[in-house]
Image (cartoon, rainbow, N blue to C red; front, top):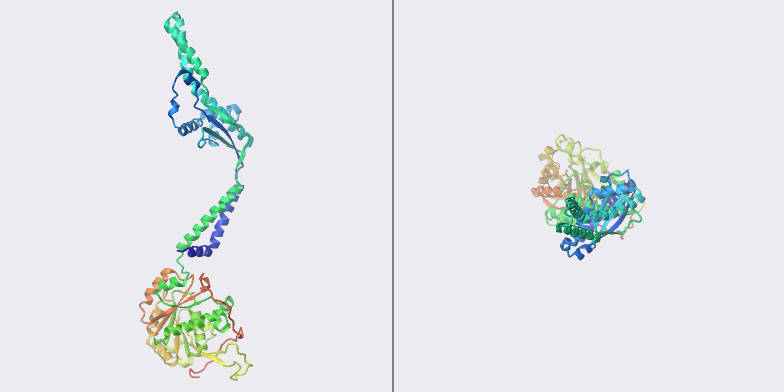
Length: 529
């Protein structure tokens, strides 16, 4: 995929991206508004390795060879012992918090690249959060001093006990007694010189709100929504098997030529079952069918194709609308055209031409003749009014063409078997001898086998595909089935081409014709008239 393809996906799925990008920050906003207000205060304690007692006595400090970050992390873990938390609660006389709750609402972490411990406490009361953070850091320094002097105190207690024993034994003048007294004096000096290795350097003075952060959460939700929306759009695109451009259709149909891109007719015409080539013959949509007519003449050149079957992969691709407009356009150009409705599953051509008489099924059954079932459709000249010179005396103006339509008639109980009988083949052959071109509307290929059966009775096949309806696997199966037909594959037509990003016809040219010509008039007559 190129950058243009990625931008096309974003443009095509813009509504999905926008929906996710709006829903996620909205959810973040609602979540923030329902959160409890929490405040956080922090204090800092300095970690020091300076020890006057060791310097004066010549004793080596065992922490000198410990890495600074490891020492800071060790002290941060020491600060989390429950003993310090219990002391904090006792000092402040806080009764609505337990030791575990205080530890859960607080944290101690070493500062990066500094010998500092940061004490943070979170609470719904900003003043209580400030007092807890200050007391936490202070109690840690007291606890640290007690830990550092605990060994000296235990040593002095042991020496004092030994001295008392010697006094009770009346050996106070012995060398051992003098040595113990000197040792006790030395330990007392070391205890007095033992400095604290932790100092409170920044006591909490205020608490800041940390929850909810409505603005931050909304902004982060918006950014996350854009990322998730874009990811969802591309995931949807990857799972969507609909075909979106004519080039992919051509490749999957084995390189069939594209004969025309046709946009969807206006909703008004669709609701009234009217053809754009009749109702709006000067519109750009009708011009697309004239381009189809011209390209079809080119691909027929030198091939001897006089009968063309028009089909599609599935229903709702616009094959019947396409073949009817194409037949009108060909008839206006002077081609003698017979339009046959052999979609015996869902016939439609009789509706767009307003026909209610017999059809091809009754001709096959011998109830009516072919000449009686064929309906000539009078096509007025585009832009000519009835009161202008050149009329033929019947009020319709000069004819621009005569289209003969053979409707489907009553639907047989088994259409699949009906299209394979020899009588129908003889009717198509007779039409081929009478007309320059015979257009046959057939059912979709992937639903029933009627079209494949009829392909043995025609010279060429024209495929109609609708953008965003046909799927990739459908085209693959359609290409496989079409490869088995003996008829010549002439090409394919893309309907609903306005949904293709690269598609567009210019509308700068216009015709000076009447914008809304009258409906064609169906006149029962013989084929030769």
